[in-house]
Length: 64
Image 1 (cartoon, rainbow, N blue to C red):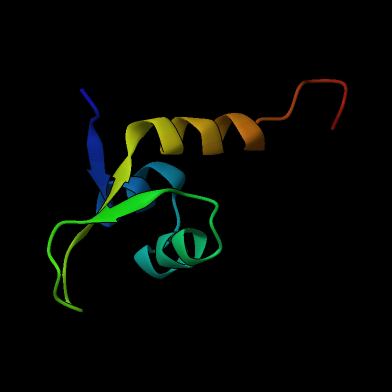
Image 2: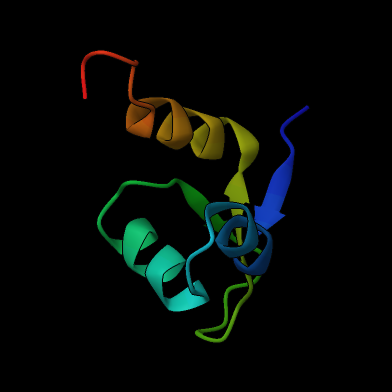
């Protein structure tokens, strides 16, 4: 079963603002789904997408 995070949860874990998380979503760096059809609908980020983003950003020691 797919699990989801809020923009606030992702922002806290990455130590960035929610606006930055929204920008990552718009740029396709994070995959998100809307919970409603309204323009104000809440978005949720899949944990798989979050973990993949973190893995892509991880630097291997000695290769930085």
